[in-house]
Length: 329
Image (cartoon, rainbow, N blue to C red; front, side):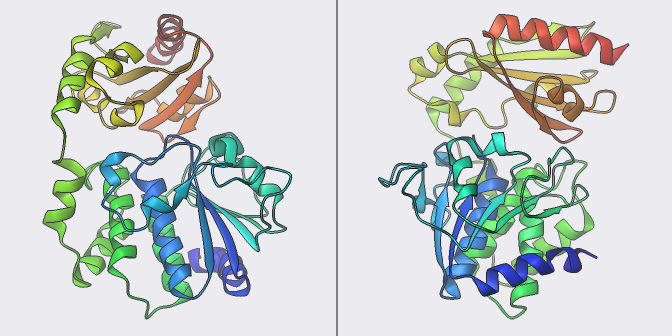
């Protein structure tokens, strides 16, 4: 069934020669890994690929081959009115056009738009939509796409990117979205020669002193609500400035809140621009994180989601708490 859904994508990518691939704002391992794997594959087959992202990729993923090729829309001198035309624009791990950020205009630079994603909240905004909520990650879908296009293809760089996407989105193969397919793909790429110990250390056991100091500040901000069923954590601009980091260095910190016994929902509130707050949500069983995020224009998965609230941190906390009280009743 998945092969049938991927067929229009296979045909478009085989037919075209010049592509744009877009990752979502505040990119994570799945978005970056999926984009790099597909880009490496297409370039290995003689195609021209340009990688776009509204935000810079996390420094923790700097080891992935080709990551330096990501550019912010407009960074290479083109304007929306005079940018290149593409045979297809491929959006990976982006549930809606808003998640494309400043790269959204690229959808107008082609007659073929492709949306590959695994978020149940996807709005099906492209001409070709392959959305599989049961997949562990978008990287899982990209792996299947690559194998459909060339079953004999081998590239350790591409498969490191695939493994990175799957491993990060499943929490090291520990979250509820870990599928049998995720394990099968991991087994295949390990057979190709992937160094699991190296990647595990780079992805999950590789931090800086500055990030540890930031984590200490974030944990010190811990708040408990709803009789211990809800935890809030805060990342302010002042905290980031004190340790010399940017907001891309907060990945995974919300998990410290959800790991507490009896906590049903954890939220990390990250100060963005003035009167705007980014919220990362993690839940266990009682609360649907994607439904909570959707109340504020966001989205994601049942156990992990996020949103942007047009308010300062304290007001954002109040809004999330009120919504949570209703969901926990």
